[in-house]
Length: 394
Image (cartoon, rainbow, N blue to C red; front, side):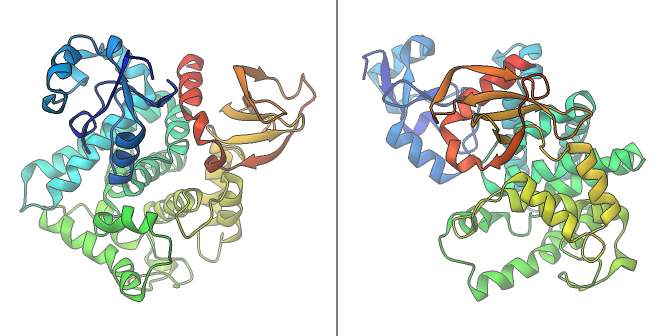
């Protein structure tokens, strides 16, 4: 490894804090960009084992760290970045949302705090604003993130999907803010054990299943302790696992008791859960998740709302990895009027090697078709390239 790089330390990659410098592996390949937030012990362990920092780009801070590297404490980076740059970097923005949600969870564990409701609603408003500006971009960034804390990224993804579907149903802006707040906090009753569940190799035990079935009730109680009395917000938290046919939990209520906001939340929660694999459940592709939503329409989920969601995000949502008829692997960067012909950019050649430079492909002009959807697990190494591509594309 070049003397230009130095090993990272625990103080450089604190859980819950944004990275002040990009992290590279021993070959100089980017592992995680500056500004991204570490949200799990697993991420931290991997970076401590494999990570290096470019001392040239780190500048003066590493002059200090060469003398006593372990004493270096990273400062927050958001104030040092140009506001326009922050606005345009969707991945940095998502990392900031993760950080805020991480802090909100910690805040929710304390006695009633007047800031809790205010901060959740502020985050909800920020998400709503970004969805108004560039909903496809936000959806893509969340769709592509399979590395951060399951519960946090899942909640953000649900929040954005709720906003996207609800806006098409002409639900008022104020009610949509309450829905986003509900989506952000819907799993607060289980989030402390969520990442461990996500990583364990075996299926949940009977005791864990009991806690899982109790988490909507626990989450509602936790929010009421924080002074939350918004009926839309609380309903999303309590009923997001209920189903139209009464087969859900915790109360087993049916369609008559499930409002449109709750039905939308159920779709968002189901979709994001299916597309994010666990150690004991194989990863499903996005089109497999959409098929499950459609199959469960009318009986468990609201078919009209499922169709609204599919029409809005397409059968190949932005950020999806797809296999082309020429055997290349491409990422979907934009939807088209023809749902089967989204705009894509090739990342992997037919010989399975990464392309030296991403290549836009016009499916119609080039006579290409999408012949399959690829899981993210096979292409984790492409994450930095996809982020760079997405930034340049925008």
